[in-house]
Image 1 (cartoon, rainbow, N blue to C red):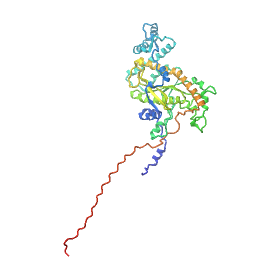
Image 2 (image 1 turned 60 degrees about the horizontal axis):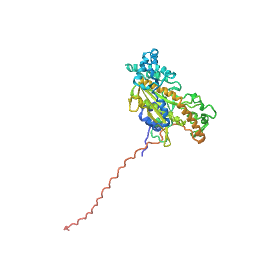
Image 3 (image 1 turned 60 degrees about the vertical axis):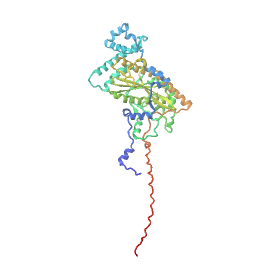
Image 4 (image 1 turned 180 degrees about the vertical axis):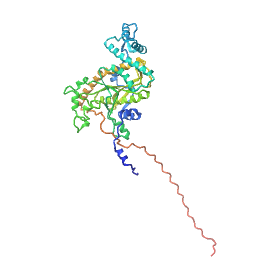
Length: 446
């Protein structure tokens, strides 16, 4: 086989490490995302596949019904008349529109107490977002992603009180499960991505996790002193150490405590075609968070929200062990049956922020996520990390190195399909040559 020749420049280019793709580039290309997701063992499933032990988490987050006092919308109640005097006709129209379209959000069992009044105060801001969203829709002006993000903020900011909201926080991406057989340079560039920067994320505040690291014999301190299996020969405190692996962020924090994220969201430019790339980009972030939770022995889901123009979608992701291997599963939120929600797509429930009942539900979703992050989710983190310490001490379990590390490149040539081998042509029949007898001359003259 002749050896192919190439120029010196081409040889240098072939030996050079190619720059990895960014998370955004991977999300924009369906095939690239499938390659990345396959190497993370990420798969799309139905919410019914959620482990029963984690169902309580989704029940708390997707609880929108019976949350507001019925008397707010009852024109004959004293509370309604008081609100009409103090809040103005515009806000009351907002409440009445929501009640007419989705009365299940309201309940006579909910009293007008301090908790309800906190929600009422927040809804005054949310109603402004509702007004802006309808104004933008009716306008002929072309609105940018930043314009919409300002309106989204009017829904999100009032809802976040207890958790740690971080905008544009760079998070570490996970190591692929298998890197021994990379057939293409493009695959190496996809799997080589090391970070992502979601538009927004919710974290458990540091002070909620301080019990993990205050004492000399606390879980965090014990695990930090443990030398990981993959770090043999390296100094304690390297990139394989628990100090690095205990945060989902690219940079390790100043405080010696785990950094754990519970939810991510993406804001995308107007246009329905932007929702799918946004969902994939959001899925990259949730997958990283779940690989982190698995390494910490934390059994809890991670939520994702995508905002595009007036549409909002949500998904729930979790990790589980199947056939002794960890897999990441993601399920779209299709709506709650009792809500009579509209299904504008085959998979997702689409909340329309131009509708009062929908924008209230989105506000309640973010509010639920905020309270769940510092409640049930935080408790799962404390339980998981303490359990991990016991497994390391008593059962000899090794710490899991989940963050991307090292250089990835093409390792083997792509297998080629076997060439078709032509059957040899049948040999031609040999014809027997007959020997010619020589003729003797008859009656020749002498």
